[in-house]
Length: 120
Image 1 (cartoon, helix red, strand yellow):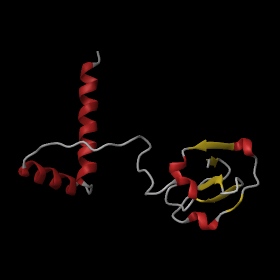
Image 2 (cartoon, one colour):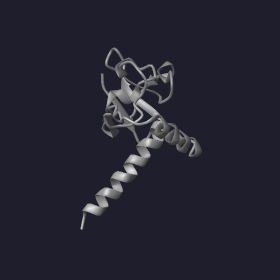
Image 3 (tube, rainbow, N blue to C red):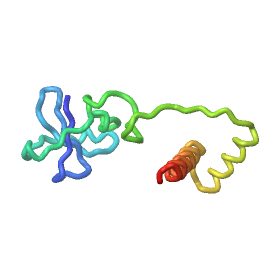
Image 4 (tube, rainbow, N blue to C red):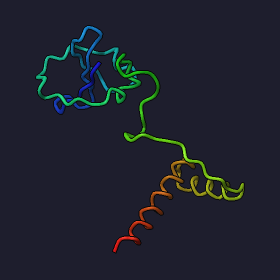
């Protein structure tokens, strides 16, 4: 099954139903229940990854929650002391972030600084 989006219908997905017809629905949880036939121009549609419509109820999206990030993600573990973890959690709390978000932001900033030092 194929998924599309259109500049003419922001906040909505356009996709194929089980019979191959095009329908559109709100890009929100259980939006598929509010689907209606799509009668607009097919040339105006941009095909996108079906995974993006996860959580809307569209049967072509597969199962599970929608991705938070368009790129593939993977877990990266770091060995650290209990004191280090406590300090990182406190810093994250002060910035009103989850510890994993805070750590990712800090690592990305450090990588950017290191990269800028290497370039002439």
